[in-house]
Length: 136
Image 1 (cartoon, rainbow, N blue to C red):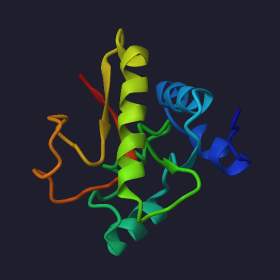
Image 2 (image 1 turned 90 degrees about the horizontal axis):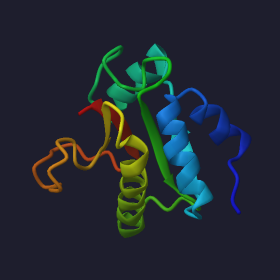
Image 3 (image 1 turned 135 degrees about the vertical axis):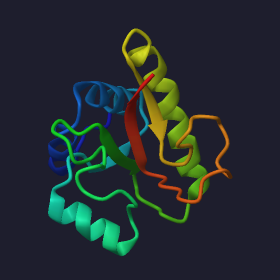
Image 4 (image 1 turned 90 degrees about the vertical axis):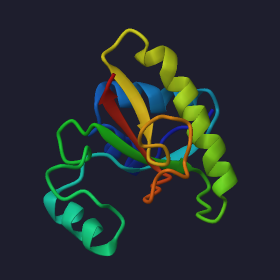
């Protein structure tokens, strides 16, 4: 059974408890992954916007609250060129989240389908590792 590195665990611990539950369940079910981001400071958010890695200025990103309402995660080992594996991971995370969020006010949104319509070509900014909690 896989376990989180200290760095991934520390980042996940800055996220909303439901995100912690979702990603811990994904890991326990056997899909190994890395938590890249949880909470993000103003300095880091400003840097990511400047680099084009985010389009949301501070403090509007779901990463900027405490607890963070967003997590960035990717399959381990990391291979940024393997979009198919990332797509499988995204589907796995979303499917894992459904029963966890069923009786809550939240839904999980992926950074490749911001409007949850199951289409990705209607978005001009695809953020493969991004997952966020939104009100249903």
